[in-house]
Length: 246
Image 1 (cartoon, rainbow, N blue to C red):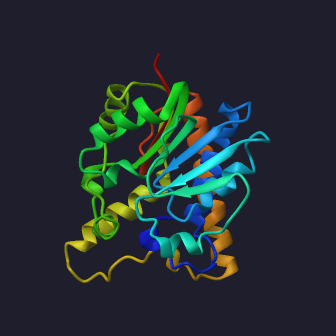
Image 2 (cartoon, rainbow, N blue to C red; image 1 turned 30 degrees about the vertical axis):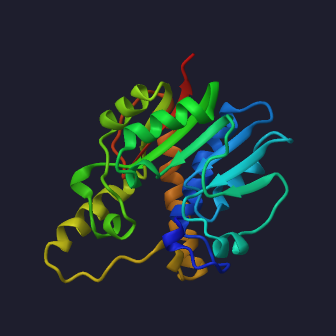
């Protein structure tokens, strides 16, 4: 969860967040067969990295890095063995770097990604990235989260290649949310819509939460199948698993 959406209190995770975490956990679990050192850039409250650690081979370690980590926030983050928090990437290299919904926050995204790959990723190491897709869908929610842009899949893939990475797998994600987002984007032009809610403000009941989680889980499962078959289907997000070139 982005720190802008984090209250510092325990709460029920948004179904989107839970489905997203399960999807990326499967991607990483299939790609990693030995203990690794993980760097989660833009880790927010660190929930995804802590959850992912449970699925990684024993002995793996995670570093959660976020420029928003103030002493006050660091004091609120849950402590756990083999997990550390840092406001900037440590001066070392990692076997896997997570760059999930981060690049859209960075003004010079190319320089940021290139430096990260060159100095923080082991040769042959893996990087898993995701970005919000399609600039035409840039909305109030993007503004609320401080997004500089949204990406076309081709543009983000090229950015990753220029950063010294070889894409291994990629695809759209959250296909079913494209139409609702497009409708909201069109309705925003009327000026009558209230500001969108943070995912940290999710307070729906168990029935609604379970139904939405089930639907998004099916959506994510379809994304995985489509990627394995090399089929390109647009989604509200786009992701790529890459390897650092020698």
